[in-house]
Image (cartoon, rainbow, N blue to C red; front, side, top):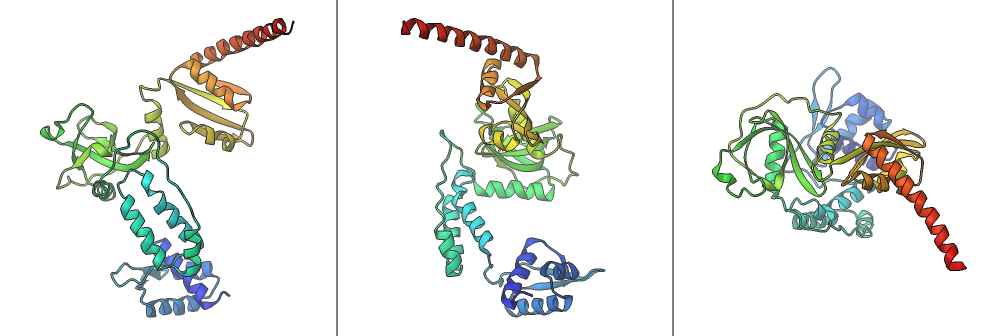
Length: 330
């Protein structure tokens, strides 16, 4: 059985991880008796943590929120996770760089010396992609997130490109479903009530209106997940009109780092399915060659034809290169 102090830290960490914990499940996770759990809960209460008893068939406990909550405790992994998240906040586009720096300093001050030393040893430089990135008002993110959580129809002005007079038109109305990031920008995935279709709205162009609309029943989002839905939307963008699917003779883990804009699916220890886009079929076919492995083109026919043209050109290049080298040597 772990020491009381270590066990209390583990108990507190579990209580912070989810809303309700059945007493029997806590005892199992801590490898102690239900009686010991009750005693440890009493100790946490004496330290000022508001742990409430949950009634019901199983019984249990809940760590409630409150202004008098003592400083949170972090284990080593949590401390590193918090530091990484706050140090890399500068590239989220959420406009919280200064607040993140102050939050990291506050968290650091209440940490034990051992954890503070580990956090201080973490050096992360957050580098943004080239080009201007719109900054998002954190208050807008909070408003949109609340609408998603509460399932309330969102009313907002939307400044589409080339339309600075968005505020003079009637507000848009949409059922917000997900707030996501893609390529350094924030997007709202929502059902557009006027157009009766799914849309992705750039958050930096949204100006919410108050009050919000009525509550709604969430619709089923197309695709297996919100990530798949957003990826499919952006990979089908007009700027990348050529989209192909291939099977490569490499594990997905070896392909994913070099195909950040592609969908990579594991098919086995040495095979993966890749769906990717490019400006042209020739460019798409040429890009596949960098993986230096067997390629099976699933489709479309245009990609197969482009691979055939490149194969012939490369073969001709190899032959002409050999004859040219011979001429120079003689």
